[in-house]
Image (cartoon, rainbow, N blue to C red; front, side, top):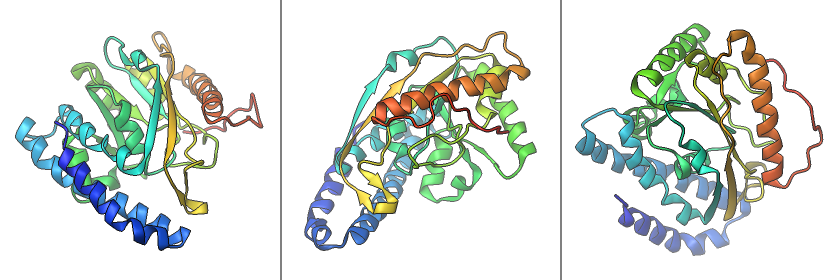
Length: 279
C-alpha cells in the first residue's frame, strides 16, 4: 500500500514553501526543515494508525510493513538516496539480534529503508507518550524499556529473549544507546549482546555511513545527500556464555567502527583502539 497522495501533498507543500526557504538564513532554513520533518512524522503516524487497525486489528509486528511503506516516501521529499549492500544477510533461519549505529532523528528513514519482515525495535519508554508517533510505534510492536531503571530493563530484555524464540522475530537495537553524530561510534552497551547470548541467536551488524556531509545540526546543515548502508556477516553466539559477552561486544564494535570509517570515507585516527567498559 503506497500512500502516493501523502507524498504528493508533502511535495506540493514543500514546493510552495521553496521561495520562503531560499530567503531564510541557514539557521532558519534548518529549523524549518526539521520542523517540517516532525510534522510529517506526526501526520504519517496519524495516517498509519487507522490503516494498521483496519488491516490487523491491533498491536503486531506485521504492522511494520504498513509503517515502512509510508516512511520510505520521506526520502523523496528530502532528496536522500540510499545505497544498500548485503541485504541478503538478513535471510537467516530463525530469530536474530540486529545492531546498528545511531546518528540522528533521520535514522528512522534509514531503518525503514531496509527493515526486514518480522523485526521489532527496542525503544526508550518516553517515546510511547509522543502522541500519534508513540501510538504507531506501539501498534508496530516496538518494545519499550525504562533506561533509567536497570532492573526494569534487564527484566524486559529477559522477556524479549523468550519472545524472540517463541514468535520467531528479529530484534533491532542501537547499542550506542543514544544518538551520536560526532563522526565516530560511541562505546557499545552490552544489553544487545547479552540478549543474543541468552537466546543463542546470531547478531547481524548494520552500518550506516556518516550523515555529516548533508545533515549537521551544529552547522545548521540539512540538504540532499547519499547514505551508504552495509549489512555485515552474521556473528554466531551458539555456545557462548555470559562471560563471553565483553569480548563479543568488543569484536562487533571494532568491525562496525572500521566499516563506518570505510563507508564514510573517513580515515580512522585510532585504528585498533578499544571501547570503554559499558554495562
